[in-house]
Length: 365
Length: 138
Image (cartoon, rainbow over all chains, first blue to last red; front, side):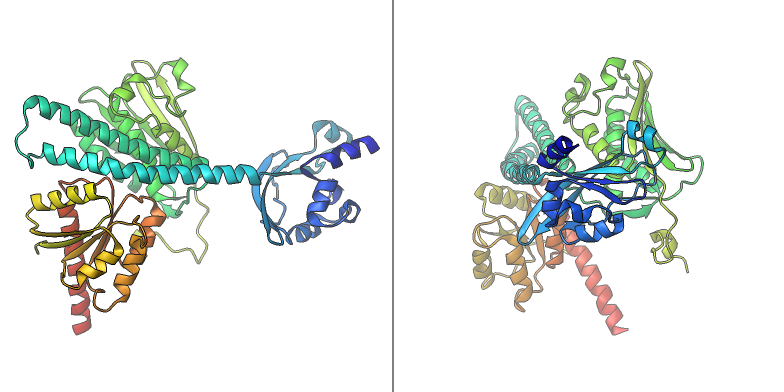
């Protein structure tokens, strides 16, 4: 037992064990030192008392509640000790099944506190670099795109058909470069957990209609018809309208790109007790089963997507956006039969009396 | 409403040229180009534009600070400011708009529609002002 204690005290991460009655049964030396008290002083305290101790340093301080006892949890916390600010990742898990067998149900939880300050700093530097690089790239792109657009407009005189064709290639490539820079910036924010969502209570139908309007000029080029199919009114979700529009626009424009001329792309909206579901369905080439697992990865576009000016990041961003909303996304597809990209968002809890009504409702007297 | 006099505050000379040509294409006769916020204030002593097109990332005084000072000074407060910048993030846009800008356009821009975008912002601003004046009169 002594040897085990020494091992746990030697760990660089803090450890805390709560027993079945939510009382502290163990704290290792690392966590005790973080709290500036001895491990013995911690043992026997209730989870609530321990949270008060933590609150001197940690934000958020309270230990997370688990209504589902088997759940594993992970969250980031800030740790302020005087002038020093550090970041910890708190991982928590139910005590193991072996212990559960000895002690019956509800055996408590173990919490581990890992110092991730260095990772945070690296993440921040990476994010800043991408942000600065994106700004710096835009300046030459503005000159190139502006010059090419102006020449193509005839402003600088007539161009021969060959010149026209070459300039159109330059214009198309420049537009693609702009999309790529935008997508890299978006994805880096999502991956760094820096995406700020402006959550509103909203009906996904309105967002789907807006997304379809945005993609219509692209669809018109090949005669692809766009339609929203919503048999019943949808429950309200809590989401960032711009980001959900971005997700649906990505899916619909992908569907259009992979559809044969004059085909139809349908956005099917439905719901059950827990979720609002949005499925973007096309009659395109479909995706081979071997490619399905990598379709949401970065730069994993199929050759057709690259040919059509895709950046290879659209689906990775879409998945990131849906994940940020605590939703889920997947694809169903068969070669030659088209694809269905489906995402779900959790239905919002009923509004509290202080929650403002939706804009449409607020206008009514 | 017609757009005739534009002051462009932009430190990249190539982008200055593209802006000038795209406005000239749509008949804007008087486009004055300056490279810094300080030059902007100096030029405003003798030139009153319909709109100031303002970059953000410039040496010494950035576009946000330039806009803040323009809106603080009674002599320049009423001149509409439209940002034209490579800073595309939501927080950047919000910061610019909070400083009293009329609009926030991002780079790369479409030189064929730049004039129309600025004009649309000016018209919207003018309509709002008329509405406000009407309400005040009533």
